[in-house]
Image (cartoon, rainbow, N blue to C red; front, side, top):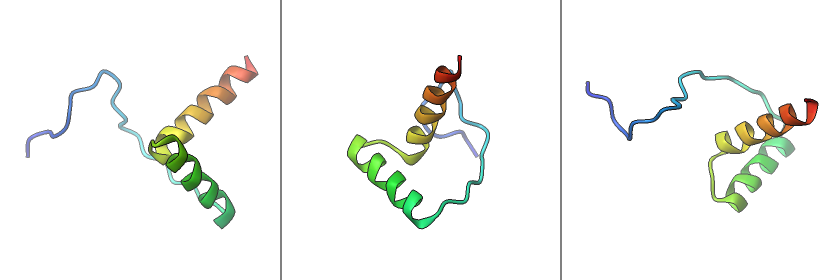
Length: 55
């Protein structure tokens, strides 16, 4: 099967399973909706911002 989608220089090839409480899941859904982005993008952004804070 041929690759689909647009080429990227930063492929997301690793998956990760996270368990959330219902309230955390609702918050993530709300943030993604308000920012008009994916939940994955919200988590990646939060992770980078947290990492920058620790530097």
